[in-house]
Length: 133
Image (cartoon, rainbow, N blue to C red; front, side):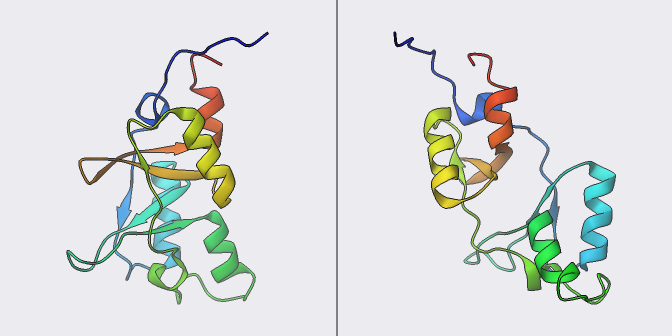
């Protein structure tokens, strides 16, 4: 038997904490900020209005610093970031958020409203913060 769930949006399950950093910051500075703020993702700021945001996560740090055995003080965030950022609309149903993230192989994405990032949603948030699960 199928049970219809109540609508829940990305906004409803997102975490509001976002940390922005300049791409010229080093990976070491980025990790220190991640530790201090207790986040797993950094949003890399645009260099100019027509630019796109970037994003740095733990996988980027492993792939760009640990595996090639580089110094975290010698690698800038812009060198290892993923760009452009793929975001989800704040009013998108969590089912579609889950489907999108799974299809493109991401674990989390910024939530966007009125052309601004307002939070971060992750696959685990879709379960843990979902009051209708």
